Length: 314
Image (cartoon, rainbow, N blue to C red):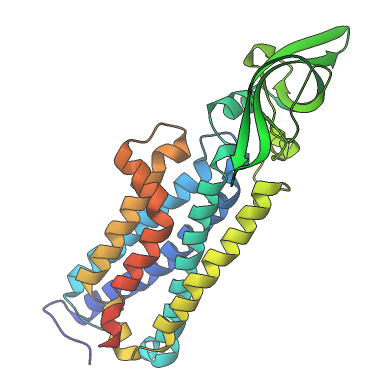
């Protein structure tokens, strides 16, 4: 039965629908923010789209929470409170939790596709050209399990241009084979500002980085690894989400969904994730707590939802 407080029935009904609409709008805005996050590292920062949608999600969560506290624990008993709606809503929630976790992990994994160097080149109108190594400085072997996977070098390369050639300095150029004088490499550079130097990395899809356009799971080694990781993370949390969707009693799940204290924890988590990711999205340097929050978000989000769902098994 729905608990009655001193608020009148119209006020209670308004609060109930504020909670429901806030949850729906928050679900959609969070999903859109994470879709943008999946392919944001191919673009120059600031990444305004995921920042704006993330801010909308936080606002929806706060409005919903205020309405829940105003309801003082009242649990609605209407056509949207039966087992079908409760289980369906819970399943959609866990789908979102898994998607958020996967998107955060992919953004962290592909974070090397962004940074000040690439941002500067893309802002100056980056393009990809075939260059020739004319000087090679220091070379460092890149090892994995004591096996050489590639080389990081300091190079000076020559790029042909109408009327001559441009010389570019490339620091940390990653190649599979040790480069030498005369070796040809693909380089990302800006014709309008050769002083920025160049970017060489044979594990990257340089053409995608040059376009400066959203692209998830780019056509390179890192993109393939990101896709595999995304599917794996989604699978793990969706499996656990299915357990927490279909195993608990739907009445207990309904009480949890309308419990202001439990939802306060989840709202605080949403705000913390936005706070941690905000400087990264806007191209600023995060402080240590923000960095830890953003880096651990793909685990912290699902674990918090698991922790606040245990009561449904009681």
